[in-house]
Length: 455
Image (cartoon, rainbow, N blue to C red; front, side, top):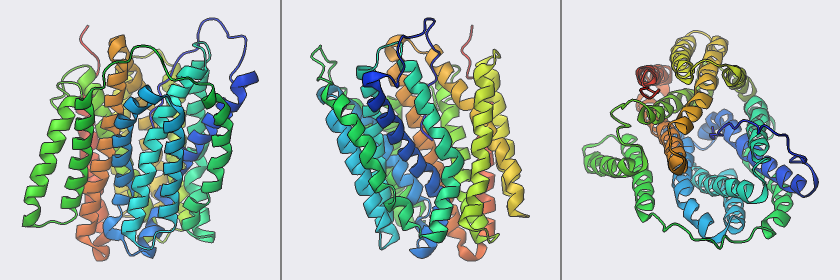
């Protein structure tokens, strides 16, 4: 799920709102674009088991998610310099066109490899579009209105989180999984047109620009290529893959040293542990989340709609917990620790429940969702509070990189495990994967004890 940093409203109320006058069209366009991106992200988990069966691609199941995450990570870093140089208009429209192209490729895919390629193209488009949208907000809205725009973006994720899995399952069951992707294509046009007037009014910044940090670009390419190579090698256990694994680990090590705060992998107190916890919790939670529909449909005979309901309850828990932590005066570290504990308990509960009864996974997964709701916003606030103003952008990027990389690597590793056990022992493979997820979440509990800087 995309990170939205929460902002508090200014002391004095603005005289206009984000839906008044010239702000109405860009606000609606931005919210609708994010809603569509969120809906696609939330619904794909429900339809992936159907896609894998139809295209005979269980061995590439995890790549349907990891390819998107890795491509998005690369695009997020590379798009920043492009937007700074040319302004947000061209990158945003290019990102949306790329996202639509990915929908076409995935929706029309004749093979699982083609579907994975389409998902990667979607990730590129999503990454570029989101970076450009943030710059649009900075250029179009005055300071007093920006918190309200970010609040609207947060709200744009609520509806897709609640109904996306169920709607995706319904469409896959009654119209076919391809329409989950192809059906979104005409919906991209209206919000894009709403944004055109605002984009025309944004001039390229004429002020002095910081020189491009090419080392970050190289690091982003190294991390993305390393993650992709590692996941490829894990899916093909063979002695010939050892050089590939070594090269992948070297790429990850080189890139992460430059993209993450010093001491992140050593669990250093303060900001490095904040970034580490985010990656561990995202990997454990979303790793479990993407395999729940596969377990429910393949082992327990659920329909895609029924599997979507189980994912929806996690979104309810996430939303409720997010509201609670946002209004509380307790320390942020307390909520991060509580969140890590609940995610660990939720994953363990789901893993056990899936061995017994599919519906028993629903209440356990509410706990997992609540854990993410308590932790995500608190981690964002801790990061901002511990970052000098001049480093907030770089550190926010590190948080997002940790989130994306953690999710893609854990999902890919679990996919390799499930594929290794095969369809005949799918239930055992899912149990082993669930145990792995719980162990990763337990490490996050330890790191959560170190997220607050020394006073």
